[in-house]
Image 1 (cartoon, rainbow, N blue to C red):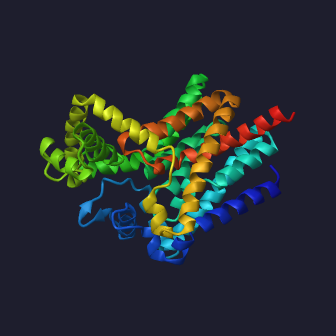
Image 2: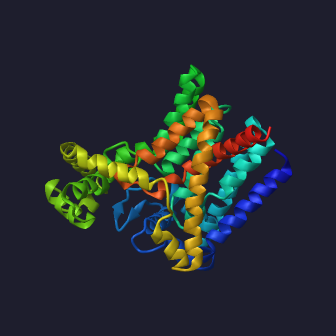
Image 3: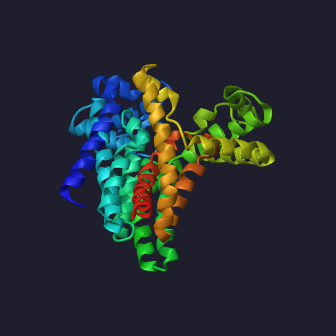
Length: 394
């Protein structure tokens, strides 16, 4: 790709993302979102790290892995505590990812594909909107995209960066497994081994720390908490036709745990309660299957009404942002299907990865899980668009 192409992609991405998050850049409190949002936990953990601990309210916060809080702590120490520094850097990360996607597409499918893929990545609405909040999605999408970019040629670099992504969100483990599997399918054992070894380097210290302090070598209790705070309650909602709040309260008695929220902070208890939650799910497979399918479908479209309303209220801008997100999703899904078919084994691996990213969250499915999939969809969509153009207008 030419320097002017990179400049176009980066500039368009910045303009688009800044326009999406203007309220968060004007008001520092906007980046924290409403009181129930995870942002407040991440912000508190970031401040805790600057004090040399990893606690909220005196509890070791094993529920969240340390990647994003460490990112906030670094900004706190380097630039100051204003959340707008995080928003600004997340906007810049989005621009860099767009450039990376453009280079990725351009090196294999030509300049036009690179330009198309890069621009589409820069216009991605999920990471665009969530860049305005202190949430993991922008950083996770960036580290995952960089890790995947280096998978084929530089497996050690890829593995290390994907290890960092797993410290941001444990879902990074599955991305690394797909990346390693890509090499294994090609019987390139050395590259698969290098990727796996490098992946372990960033996460081993955190696993050791949790083994010493909490008795279990885990990244976080997010997986266990997802079972008893979302999967099991959503199963009960489908089974009994009750609200989430009522299902959660009833499950507290059914699972023998009076405070499910507190259980997420105790790795041993979280593991035991999660096992009971899985047993409940297995007794109601039909209800769980329906809840899982609904969550899977939710991940494909939309932007989350709470997020757009919090930044933009009920203004026409909020409606336009939501409308754009639907049109963008439809456009990229259609073109990505064609693009993946042009990409051979790499396309199959990336398409499978997108399926995993949207399927694994299950009943807890949300548009937020689409964030790491957006750069991949943009890559395939740009390739698909240029391929179709050449087919129709040879």
